[in-house]
Length: 173
Image 1 (cartoon, helix red, strand yellow):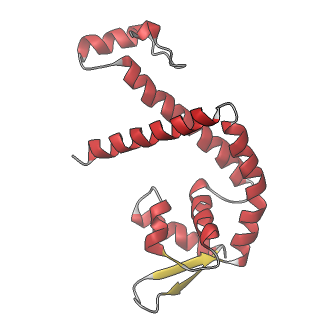
Image 2 (cartoon, rainbow, N blue to C red; image 1 turned 45 degrees about the vertical axis):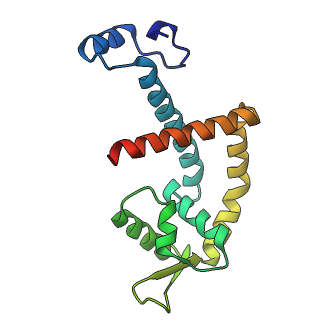
Image 3 (cartoon, rainbow, N blue to C red; image 1 turned 90 degrees about the vertical axis):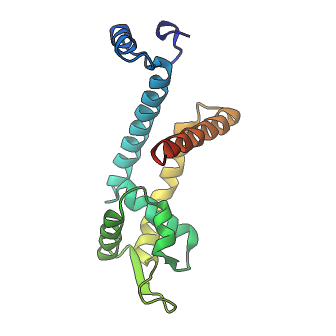
């Protein structure tokens, strides 16, 4: 399939495609469109969720951490395990935890087995805010994916995880 026949909803301009193909023989427009469409969709989702969460003084990063703690409550969770839900740097993760603690969203204690390890759980304020946010958040998630059939959702998830794996291996070579 050439660039003009692409079924992607974000066709690259013909002149750009021709220029890139001429200067970079390995360039494949359809592959670039996949990444571009993925980035645009992710950006749209992040913006929509970000606007909703901002009403509650939350960012996507704070929400993700609070949700991870919410599903593990009432237990304390080691910060090292919680960091699996974080996509940023270790320094930013520490800053995020500090901000959540200052905002009284989370409680922290030192591990009895290892004084260097921090254990975290949702504080009552964190529980209240998550339980206030969740009903509409769930509706938004359902609405955002409602145009896809069950099979399409499963296939999209599978393909995105495959793309993620490909990207990870590309940078770990």
